[in-house]
Amino acid sequence: MLEKNEKIPLPPPRVKILRYMFIVLAWGFFAFIIVQVSLAGLGLFVNGEHWGMHRTLAQYFALLPVGMLVLSFLGKLPVHLRWICLGLYLMIVAQFLTVIYSSHLGILPALHPVIALFLFWGSLTTVKHAHPLGGK
Image (tube, rainbow, N blue to C red; front, side):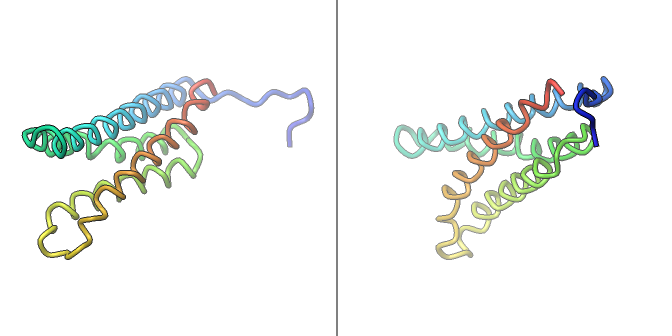
């Protein structure tokens, strides 16, 4: 246990860099979710041509949570952030499944926008919890 005047040791510079990389990916994923929801809204309410961009963009950013998960281990981040990253990845997989198998799943594809809400919440939570770790 630390005495009153002892300082908490700082992580090595490598760990600090990995934590900053995690924060950048977390912000990128959060921005991606916002853009995806916006494109879905544009495709639904403005012009159906936006669905193509919504579909394409998802393929490019789908693996960001995997990168975040790897960085969470390398950057020695708290365990709860690792679980959130795993959850984000699994929700992305669920999003793809609700689209790919929409004709075979009955009403389950209706979960697609609900999962998007959880992705927004999870990505916001990740940014919120990871940001203070950049300075440590």
